[in-house]
Amino acid sequence: MKYPFIFSLFFLYTTAGFSQNLLGISTSRYGGTNRLYINPALAADSPSKFYLNIATGNGHVDNNYVRYQAPFSLLRLITDNVPAQYKSADGSIRFETDYTRETLNGRPKNGTIWGEVRGPSFLMRTGERAAIAVTTRFRAVGQVIGASESILSALRASLNNGGFYSIPSSDNKFSANTNTYAELGVTYAGTIWENDGRKLLLGATGKFLLGYNTQQLINRGLDYRIITDPSNLNNALLEVTDLDATLAYTTFLQDRSLNPQTLFSTSAPGKGLGIDVGFTYIDQYDNDSPALRVGMAITDIGGISYTGGEYSFTDIGVNPVRFAASDFNGNSRPQAIAQVIQEKLNTGRAADKNRFNAGLPTSFNFTADYQLPGGLGINLTYLQDMRSVQARAIHQPTVVAITPRYDARWLSLSTPITYLNGSLTAGAAVRVGPGWLGTDNLLGLMGNSSNGINPRGLDIYLGVAFGIGRVEE
Image 1 (cartoon, rainbow, N blue to C red):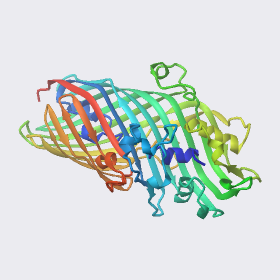
Image 2: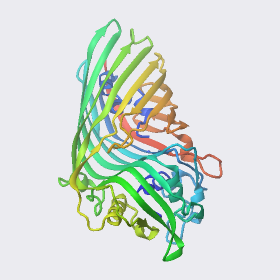
Image 3: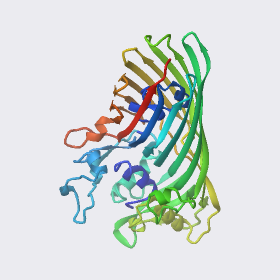
Image 4: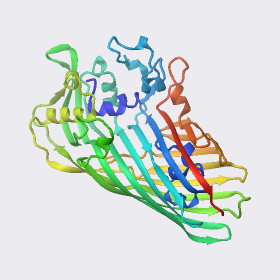
């Protein structure tokens, strides 16, 4: 089974290709609109009268199941720059099973791939005490939460490892979600209290969301075993004997590419609303004094309602359902995989519902920032996922990060150190004038079997954004 739905999301995606938090940018006071995605109150703390984000993009992958150890780096893999010796005659990459190493510790496994483009966006101070901002963002996410090691190990071996044969596995639970959508946000932030160098900022962002594509597999209980294919003793089958799950998906992008015509299509299957809300306390006696900023926010409250098929499975009948690798030949896209699973489980069945919801990655965000007048500073960021494992929603992976930095009007340098998904990573970011370039996982871009660096993911971001005019404070 080369491309089962859950495995393509968790393993093939995590070895092919984001951080959604852009810590090198979002922790800088000169981050402008990029700071608002962690706390909208920070709009009223912008040092510029007007800030324009032309475009900022990022790509991120993380997981706690496999470490990457191929002879070429993940950066080469996602940029399609793999040496010819590792490709087949048709140009496809020969990605061997031993290019990854499992982490087997008995814990549930999670994986996320997250790509994002922000902009154009702007932020404008409307005085010393308030600011407004208009932001745009496009997101594409694939994620698996709470998968068992047993099923992932079997699928990683493409069902061909004899050691897995006839070993039953019961009560597997996990959720798999993808979501591709765009958002338009409007932010207002202002000072609600001020006294002797101390002030409290409050901000909120309202969002209109347009959804293009989503798949959901919420598995509440799965029993299976791997058996020899009776019709071909050289092949294996995954035999599902019991299943309690919900499968939902859209097909809007099945025959479309992501282009301006698609992005602005009135027939997009999803529409929704979202909100961010937060406050920030600032303690700074004057511009020649150190500044302390402490903030709390809840972001991405809300979701998208999609037109699409939803199927509930609580009983597969007396005959087990068997999946073979050939069932997924040519079906590497998630929506095609979802359709194959539905047809195998209940051929010809009509959808139970023609509309379903996909939640946003709601999170609680805490930040504490201390900066000296000369530009040196340090930031603590804590992002806590607020969605349950079985939620029909994308999750914001829980993150704890410390970011030492130097911040000036024309130059920023930072080194984010992040704890994410059971792994510690170090990054680096630089801004010169309007240009940003950074990563929250520097070793993830370089690791391969030759240098002995075995990352669990990668992260990269870049952008062009700048402020105009200074706010007199």
